Length: 322
Image (cartoon, rainbow, N blue to C red; front, side, top):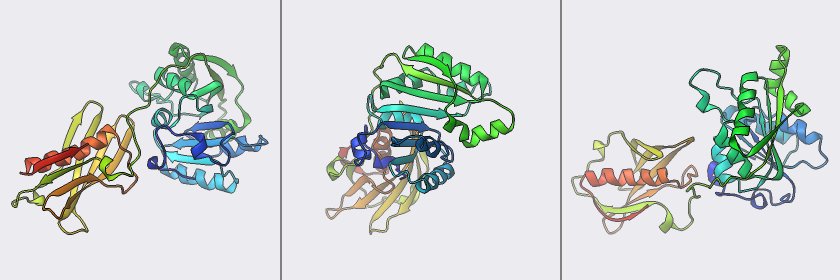
């Protein structure tokens, strides 16, 4: 099953995601590629745990979904998200039994180390989301990154490091087979939490059912308002960047839709913000539900940016709800 970000809760629970198998252990695989690891791993177990997989490649997501479906693994959820966003916002404290990272991108070039997944903040986050007795498993062929990750785990103050042989299933992945054909060996580490740092969830919410809680504004536009005057514009503050990309005529009479690009750290969303005429002559500016957006400070700011543009165009704001 493939979940877009809007299908999750923040944080979520195994009992909601896997209602038929909630009592089973919960495993997260980060960067599952084309999905070869989990069918091999699950085949070695009498009862496959609940599986959550996160990947950035849409093509890999579809390949893995087909592979898991063919293997009959019906308690598996796949999603296309940055790993740290999923782990921080979706997974609850102490929710996971295991985190698996196979052959992560080593970002070997000078100046790119900040792009590596397995750094001190990630190990602290992972330790907070693992159950007592849980573990993070790393398999990689990149010796320098392996040493870097082991040292980062120690420096985090939250993980112990044990060097062991990689599990057989990790050696059946696409990259493992590629490196093996090149004569390269894989290294494996077993990281166990020694502390559970307090790593809070962020200010992210699902699209609310109550219209009053959807980010919105009400304003009166002047008779001289001309939507043709719209220009792409950018707003930045704190941890978010909002780019208003384009304005389109709405299918409804007397209305428009603004396409906004919202970037908050590793999380990027494209959202639609409607500008709709009301019976009393005012206009409602509101985040659209299309695409399953989640409510973040940046998304609220996007609604605010559209409202500010309308105000600069002569609109008079009577209510702000964001």
